[in-house]
Length: 395
Image 1 (spheres, helix red, strand yellow):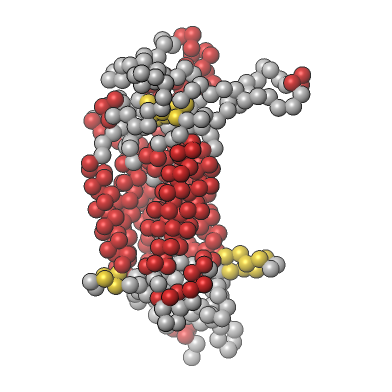
Image 2 (cartoon, helix red, strand yellow):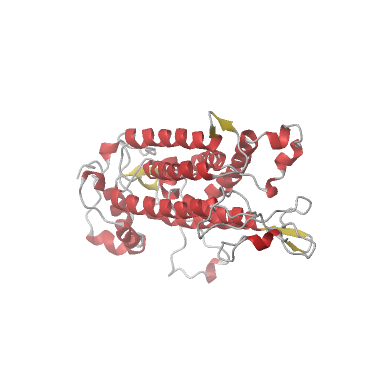
């Protein structure tokens, strides 16, 4: 009897193919989901960085470093945490480099990506905490999309279940990776039971984490990496119970899966950081006024009535929200820290205006969108607005 006939029609299906051939090039669903998730995270982060004063295109500059480092870190964590498949009795060490066959660890991705981002922001002269807080809602969205790759691969499922959303799982062909095993009639072979779709649980949880971080951050206006810490706490809380349901092979420590212990430790670390670190949302301005870009081509054909794009800043410094709003309205940089014009990488928490954490109302994200148009009104506003105050940050 065909094992596929044992599964009820109401079950959630799984794809029987995870790889398609485009001529000699294999197109892998897992890789497509990862790439799509990266794009979504980059779009969200770019929008949030621009609202904080970062020049357009900074996200791409950061991604060039963070994405490769994140992938390498994710693969290293997977290999180190599951060494038997590569260095065990029946393992093949060279398979550790076959990243296209799956096997990425989110913990390694975060550490590796953070290292790559740190290298990038040092070149941009941008505080890492600003980037981390801007990334906080986009990263769980990327993880949610990436989990669809596990669905295509028929992996990361839980134990048997009789729930209406029980998942059908194909037996994948070891001799034809990315394709289900076929019976004599050419039909894909299914496992005889239905299973908890733990990849789907994590997908839905990640969407909730993204919404939570976005809404709370919009209200409270976290700074100094606290929005990112909130993401880490929310994600690991869900990963803890989801990991307990999984039935794929994993290393066990004191009766629990390795990733369960990792979730607990990472949660505690993020909680300590969240409770100990304080500070309002950070805004940045260029260290020096942005210079207009030189017009290209024959200058006699240049339309001088249109302003040219500003050159990218060579560095940033953190300012209060009031100073940032003034800069957006007037185009004039606020005075630098006492004693010079150097960058101030992280002002003290009491140097910025009172945030919503202390109970006062502040403009929300919609106000930030309106303020983003400020430089276009700089000439008009400069004549009407008072000059920016240089030292009074307590008002």
